[in-house]
Length: 303
Image (cartoon, rainbow, N blue to C red; front, side, top):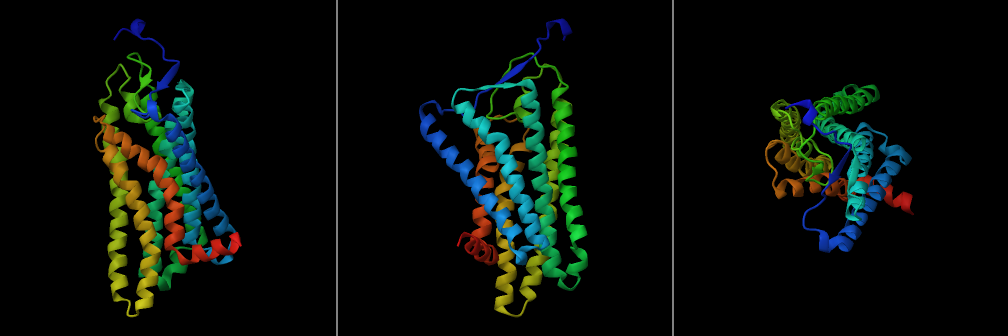
């Protein structure tokens, strides 16, 4: 296309959630409650882990990292969505770039962190005699830092590939935040490389991490079955149920969305709402309800 016919997009317009014009007040109230519960719940988890000496272990160090990521991930999308409901639908080009980068940075960092947490549970249950060396504080810090770094590099790749394209079709993004697939639909250039990268990078990373988590838990289940005492089996099982639950809540909709880059159905929107807004608010509840040590420490702090 002739570059003279290209119009420079200065701002984007986020259409927001579909069919919500008559539900603005209840939706605003619901999302405000979700965001508040996400902030309060995850801040409590971080405070409990930091303030309780008994929880100064790699498992809870990773849990505090996860809570911090959940706070940041919700803050990337939810405040903008609340503003969108109040008719502030415009987002600057630079704001869209930042939102896309930070969303994929934080979401992919969570993806890697879930895998690290599964390895930690594998080391604790399957290799208890070597756990101190396998998961020393130095190793734990490196694994956490590696998750953040890998997430950043992953996001930079997609942000650069997305926004080097010319945009001339429209400036209306049919989504509630700046994500790769909706933004690519506005490009007036060939996006086959971008879609290939989505399948090769985002989907493959999600599936690879999920497979590694699955392998870890196959070994963990075998090890738990071999434990002779019922109390030992219950304790080992309880430390893993919470992690399996949040992994399922995060990976299932995420893989469903990015394995189909050409899709634009409303089901994708529902899946995105779930893993970007709902899951971060559920994580503290799941971990506090299923984890006896977290519950006891939380009660002490609240008292």
